[in-house]
Image 1 (cartoon, each protein chain N blue to C red):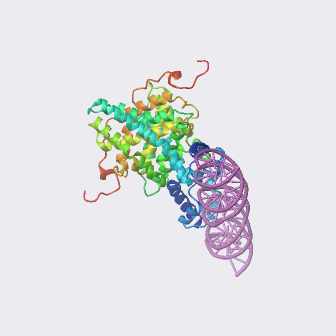
Image 2: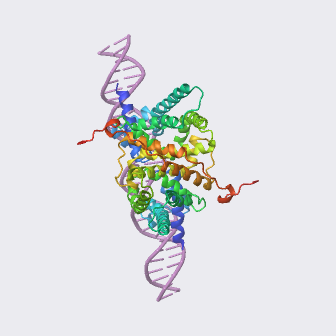
Image 3: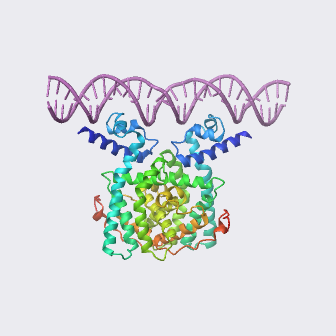
Length: 227
Length: 227
DNA sequence: GTACGTTTCAAACGATTGTTTGAATCATAT
DNA sequence: ATATGATTCAAACAATCGTTTGAAACGTAC
């Protein structure tokens, strides 16, 4: 009985503290202290601090990505081979994330903030299983978007998907960064409004006119050999 | 003579290591070791590790924001009171950042990656002077955008500006996060192309149709008092 | 109640952290 | 050449890090 309680308490507290202070700055004593468990409990239940970090990601990420894949499966089954609307695809991918971020009580919001930050700061050992966890999902959504936007080059779609991930990360980070650009002027508590705002912004960006790329050797100082 | 050399070497090395491993994970011995200076040099020249971190930001950020303000001044002077084109405003703000990010040799690129990451992870003591450093710039560009987009509510503009910052952050973080979404499929070395891609995406997002916001009390679980 | 595997506990482990110290070295001006 | 202030240096500082240990407490079956 006490076992599960201890594991869960550690995971929840660690998730929160990692989000607030980062991995390195969060000590085992802070975690176990706030969780009300013994210092040795982390090493006993998870093996090490790194393993704890991985488990914090794994327990939510696998569920999130399974949700995404299941919804995409359903959508593609309904369409029966026909290309999907880009807006539908984005709604599935980012909607799942924002739905999780809307969960303020269960810790989903905390986790999504943590995920958005870690995504740009791979911490070496997190990158490995983060890429592993995302590989299948990205491949599926990438393919769906390419199919949905026949006029847009695949490379451009990938970049714009990348930009959208950045926008979502900042959207979820919310207050932290917003306090810098606009001191308390924005309310990031209304996740319904946030979803609507982010989605219209993303769709506008995704369907924007294609950029006129400069000649590669013109603006870039790098010289391409044999070209 | 040796003074300036030591200070600069420390700053450059610290900037790089902070970007690669984060603030907490980077030790004074790593910094001084890689810089080829004595361990005590950091405390002698900067006072503390925190002061060093602040100085790493300050030396580039003040210059960057002065550049932005000067360019905006010039543009508004040319316009003579007339609203600017939104694309021009974005070009000034994000162009300055990407121009700095394009500097692979002088460390500008390294710094912009560091900045993008720190922006969502305010580290408590960095947030203060980061907000201070940005306050004037954000106010000016916010006002310019509001003037340039009379049909768009100010709150919506701020949110979209926030989203754009996220997109830019991910764009500059580049390879790190891209390796997760697309294993080596994208070339983030061509900053000219990156600038064009990002700008068209942002403009599309900025000019997207306004979202239809859900009724506040409908989707949000929070109950607003006296409303 | 006794035995057994699991979990918790206080205490300590060696290693590493940022910082400080006081002498040694340097550059410069008189 | 000598004195002075700035800088560098090796060495040590107390504090804290993640992890380990062996015994104590627990629940559960016989």
